Image (cartoon, rainbow, N blue to C red):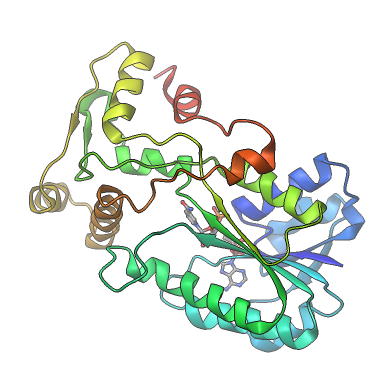
Length: 290
Ligand SMILES: NC(=O)c1ccc[n+]([C@@H]2O[C@H](COP(=O)([O-])OP(=O)(O)OC[C@H]3O[C@@H](n4cnc5c(N)ncnc54)[C@H](OP(=O)(O)O)[C@@H]3O)[C@@H](O)[C@H]2O)c1
């Protein structure tokens, strides 16, 4: 039996959609759900539901009964994620899951000096415990989603330009849908046991390049500026942006500046058998009519 966690989230749901699109029968898919009201559409398609929470070990053991192949979509509760993921891995191992496919996160610096050490920590720990568990594994090191770009740009990017302390850092921004399709391919084909893939775009772009793309799309002169972290923090604070979000933006900007999300890997292109969605194509969909 194949079970998909996070199936009511964006990546898990998109993966289920690709499984169905590729002809895999709905009644051979089981979705792990913690809120039934979010799973009405999945159930109406004939997908089986099991209920569990990553915080609740016993619920996971029950939900994993009979599961051979487990797509484990990482959780989004940064503070509690290490313990939650430990519950998932232990429950899977205990119940006899044969193959666990884990959606991890691309990074280079695995030490405490990484600006995104807090985000990377649970992923690194989870990868290690999966590898030590003896289950067959596939680790997917997903790059930054292209869908995260608007969060970095803010609401008035066309008028005010891009202001971000990212230097000339390059990022292999990758569409969630492309990652989901690659995961569906991995779930449906053989030969992915005990392998790691970096699911990253084949193109790397800087935010200066993104400003150029936005200028072409909008017909306006969209500028790029690279303030100091201090000036950036002060400006956002004065504009009333919450401290947590400023911290998030500055740490990811610093990671981008340090090249944490640049990639020369072609695993995603190889799995899809085509070019991943480009940043320009994505930005056209969003900003063409602005
Ligand atoms: N590469 C990137 O740029 C990037 C960006 C953001 C996130 N991520 C990571 O990638 C994952 C998938 O991305 P996404 O866009 O699909 O995120 P998402 O839409 O937030 O989906 C996360 C899924 O995990 C489930 N989940 C969270 N905590 C859980 C718990 N305690 N027990 C059971 N299920 C739980 C959620 O359940 P509900 O549906 O009930 O909420 C949801 O289905 C994220 O969770 C995060 O780890 C990566």
